[in-house]
Amino acid sequence: MEHRSLINDNDSDLMRQLIASLSNQVSITDFEEFIQLKSVRQNTRLWFEECLLIAFAYVDDFNNLCFEIAPGKSNPVLESEIIDWGVECMRKMMEQSGEIAPLDSSCSAQNRARIELLERMGFIQQEIRSLKFARSLNDPIPEFLLPTGYSIRSVNGEGEVAQLVGLHRAAFGTDHMTEEYRLAMMHAPDYDQTMDWVAVAPDGNLAAFCIGSIDEEDPTIGYLDPIGTHPDHRRIGLSAAMIAYGLSFLQHRGIKNVHFGTSSENTPMRELALRTGFSLQSESVWFSREVI
Image (cartoon, rainbow, N blue to C red; front, top):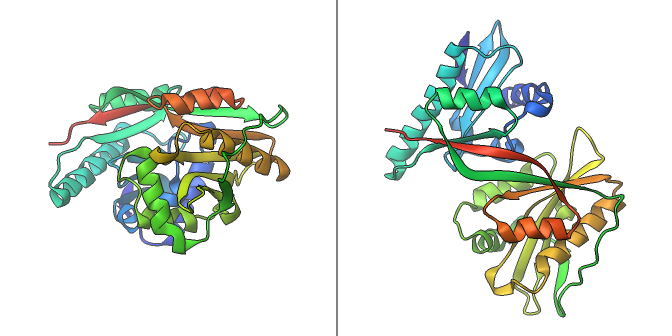
């Protein structure tokens, strides 16, 4: 077994092929966006056995250790090397930032093998969960009208990135979104600008956003995620109107089922999911490990 850093796009393709081989046991989300980032590519390691990729791991800009192992290839040595790689990356990131933070990781709540692996390696399960909701477009789409004076349109392209980043940060109350990452989202292979929507307020300011996409493997599945509203424009029905708009758009594109995700801590979005016809489909659990 050998390992090395990510070299080029051919390595990225090998990682995609490994992900595709995992069926429903994939733990990584937003791979296409993150692999566009230089910082993530620098924090990526690949493991090979007889020239075949059997595992890869990276630490993203939010301190999350993301990794996948080919079916039948997991073993104690490989598992230890993956976790050690994550800890090493985290230490370097802490040295650069001067801040102390834990190394995080997540997986499906049904993935007992991954949960046991993380617990063996010193990770502690957290209370927060990531929730995935789904609904069929065979069911009626509820009507939620836009407030007077508001409109929905697709984004105007990369020239609007600064405003989009500002809107995202205001909506979620964090600085996690950056111009670099927003551009990476727009450069991902499955990105479609016609499904990158914003709600515009009467004064011309961006008030809410929603990004839609279509599953590359199964074109009958669509996604509406993320969704967010600026604090100055909440409680007037914008998020519900944008979901209804996105559902109708995807229905016209031939989509049969729509998914979107949110955090277990985001009570308003969980309630909105139920009001717009979604039901909880699955959960992911989160783990943290102190790095010293």
